[in-house]
Length: 506
Ligand code: 3UK
Image 1 (cartoon, rainbow, N blue to C red):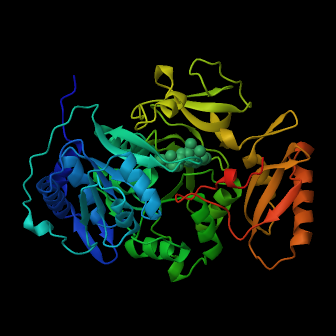
Image 2 (image 1 turned 90 degrees about the horizontal axis):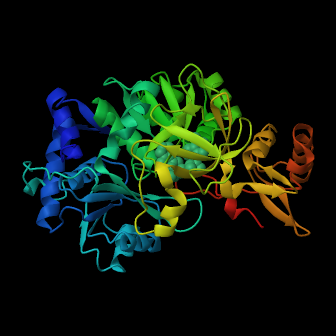
C-alpha cells in the first residue's frame, strides 16, 4: 500500500538537496534558483492557507508563463489544493464557465485580466489574488516554512481543461503523482533529459504538453526550464533559444512551419547551435515539415501524440530513427489497440494498414472527467482503456495519424482521411497550410480544401485549378477536393490545433 505523500514537496526537496543554487527557471534576464522556488512555493502555500484555501479546493491559475507559475502551482499542491491551469488567452465568459464548472475557491491571475472580469460573474470564487508577475505580491510577508499536506494516492492533485476539438471544455482531474509520469520513459528514454539540459516549450504551462515540458521535466531532472510570458512568434522563439542556449525545444507544427519560413541559416538571430533535439505534438507534424526542418537546421524533430487525459505521450518517434509523417511507435509502459468501433474496449482490432480508432492503456490516465458522467462513459472504457478519439493506421508497429474520428469523411462508400488529402495538397509549393473538411454537394459529402497561401497575392483561380490537378495525380478520385477555398488563416484552438469542424458544411 503506497504511503500518502506530497508530490510537490518531494520535487522541491530533491532539488534543494542536489542543486539549490542552480537555475530552476530562466525568464528574460532573471533567474529563479531551486532554493528560491522552494521558499516562494512554501510562502505561497501559507498565503493561500491564510486566505482560507484548504486541501481539495480548486485554485485556478490564469497566468502567463513566468516565475509566478511554478510557485503558485507547487504552492497550491503543497497545501493539498488542486491547481487548475487555464489558458491566459480566453475571453471573460470562458473563464466564468470554467470557474463555475470546477467551483474554484481561488483564482490567481494578474490585475485587470479577462479572468478577473469573468470571476465577477462567479461569486463562489471567493479568493481572487492578483500577482504582479515580477513583483513580490505580498509573498515576503509569509513564512518559508510549510508542513506539506500528505495526500492519498487517488486524491485529485491537479486538473486541466481539455481544449477539446468540439464542445465546451471538460475538466480532466489527475492524481498528484501523474505530474511525474512524463519523466519516464518519455523524458528519460525518448528525450534523454539530463541535468545539463535547458528546456524551452513554446506551448504554455496551461496546456498539458507545456506543463510536462516546462515543469515536470526541468524539476524531475534538476535541469533548467526557460519561460516566455508572451505569445511567441517565430522571431521571439529563435531569440529565446539563442539567448538561453536551449538544448531541447518543444513546439507545435504551426509554429515550426512559421519558424521555418523565417529561418535564415548562419545569421546570429537564427542561432540554433545549442539545440540537440526538437519535439512536436498537439497535431500531426506533416512529413514535408519534418524533413525540411531537419534539412535546414540539422536538428531532428520527434513527433509524438499525447493528450490531456493521458497527461503523457503514448506514441512517439525515437531519436535516430524518425519516420517523418508518422507519430512513431508506442511508448514503453503503454498498450495501444486500433479498433473498428471506438465504443468498446473489447471490440476486435483492425488488421495492419486498416484505419482504426486508437485506444490506449497505461499509467497515469485520467479515470473520469470532472462532473461529466456521459463523456466519461464514452471515453474511459472498461478494462482501463482510454478512447483517444483519433483514427490511426499501423504498419510494422508504426502509427500514422488519419485525423480525429469526427473529422473523417464518408465519401460515397469510402472513408477519407483529411490528413492524407492535406499531405498531398501541401506538395504544391504555393500552399502554406491546408485543412480538408466535408462540403455537401447536391446532398452528398465531398472533400473541400481550405488553403492558406504562402503569398496571398497570387492568382487564386489559377492556383485552385493547379491544386485540384495535383491532388488528382496523387490520390484516388473520391479523395480529391471538389473545391478549393482560400483563407488568410485557418481556425485553430488556443493550443494551435486546426479546427476542421469549423470548416465543414455537412
Ligand atoms: C491530437 C495529435 C496527431 C490528437 C497533448 C502532447 O495535444 C495534447 O493534448 P490535447 O488534450 O489534445 C489531444 C489530441 O490532440 N494530437 C496531439 N498530438 C498529436 N495528433 N499527432 C500528434 N503528434 O487528436 C489527440 O487526441 O489538447 C500533446 C502532450 C500532452 C498533450 N496534452
